Image (cartoon, rainbow, N blue to C red; front, side):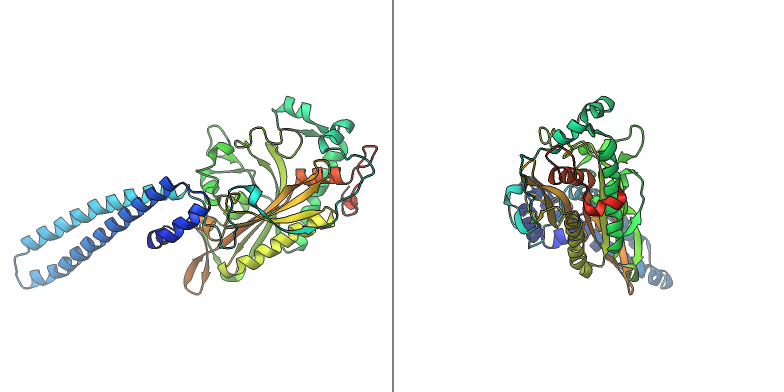
Length: 414
């Protein structure tokens, strides 16, 4: 959540940053009016409180000196009544302000390039060599449907469109990739966790999915529970409303979970294949750090995901997202895009984001340094989207007869 005190103190600076991220001018106008009203009413309340306290200190002297306390008592009661009324006004204004701020995205870092859409993202580096084929490479759904390893028809029969049933080698490869990714991350210093696949509303508010993105979540009827869209939600909120010792930081965590998304805003996109499913597997990295450590940890997370792709022999790019493509909670994001020869293009397979204190303020995640409680920085990143990694392996390691060669590092897991 954006810092309300910063909003009130430096509104124009905050508004300029939010404008870069595409926040509507009407929302900014409402924020300005509300923040000024709340600040004015709070100042009035503090002045009334000061006057009430001043008269209360006189009360004892009046009694001791035998003075008539009735007028003084009447003034104290009047200030008390004014204070109560102002407290209610301040509470209502600040609640309304908070409800709007919860729907406002994080401020982008200064280094994030301006841009309206993904077309203006900046390619930072290209890593690895694209494979060369003596035949026309097929897309993964053709390969999977040919050998029966990806059964989209039965996935639809069991659920609805954008679900798949895997069999045989594809099912085994999915499991192998999960285990390989977890082992790879653990060797890089990430502690493995196993977390619930459902989360309550408070948890989802902590990482920014609620209230703004409720339409993209699968809600459990009659329960304060949702299927998680990513294990970032669970891992980050393990420390919801906690104060962590500075000596414990950075906390670096990894977990496998299935992820569930309605993909409400993606109608017509990637309707074939595994790229955009309602249920997909992902291995996630999450870090909770001191404020001054988050940039260093961010680079480690980017390197970890990139090195994982390199170990699988998959060519990829590092892409800095522009303001128009930056996620709601992110201050800065680097995407990794893997080469898919069947589609003849690079496609996103990982996003690594530094959210600064945005999520920590919502989730009340702090660390103690000396006598001070400081908001932590939280980071998250895919390492990797398992289904998309399976797609990349199928397309990059395909043979002319339709078989798939298994990458060397996965052979022990198969």
